[in-house]
Amino acid sequence: MDAERAELTPRGELVHGCAETLARTLAELPHTITRVDLDMGGVHFMDTAGLQFLDMLGDYGRQRSLTVTTTNWNGQPRRILELAGLDTTDPLRSEPTPDAPAPALGSSVVYLERAERLHVLQEEVEQLRQAIASRPVIDQARGILMATHGCTSDEAWHILRETSQLSNTKLREVAAAVTASAETNAPPPPPELRTALQRAIARRRG
Image 1 (tube, one colour):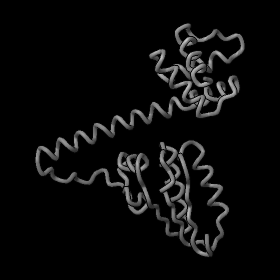
Image 2 (image 1 turned 180 degrees about the horizontal axis):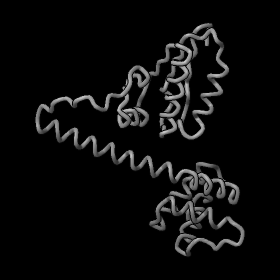
Image 3 (image 1 turned 90 degrees about the horizontal axis):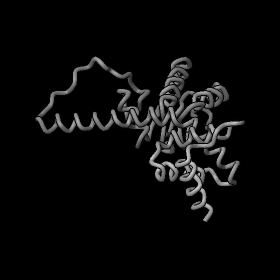
Image 4 (image 1 turned 60 degrees about the vertical axis):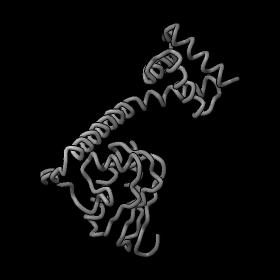
């Protein structure tokens, strides 16, 4: 940050809580700032909270009549912008235009390529929705494994994933079973799941 410009460089994931962090950061900026630049090069994942993050930044610029830019959109965050109909170069530069006519298709090959790309993006959106829904219980299960078996966060993640593979059970269901079994007077996981979990833990220890 200098006298007139502030650069924001988030890292990792833009998920629940990122907008609150941005609000605190913006509140601390001096009134001499006339430009805010957001560098997204260090962000590898975002969900709908990331779009809320952008809305807040855009509102801040409009309220204070500041120049706000965003750059270096890559990977999964860039695909989220595409799905939202935003400018992937700088989503705050212009508003989406959902009623704008689609460009003419040059050939059936182009049409098929676009249809396939849309299908892939739709699958990614569904996977993202499932990941958002599953994340809290998976994080809880990782914490329980870390506390119970003295493993790291990464090791707990691998235990859950390996248990899922060994028992042919969805990862979210494995995490839910681990979380439920930690409650007072709660029944243990089903036998096949318990066996797979024990094998996964033993492999990590070995």
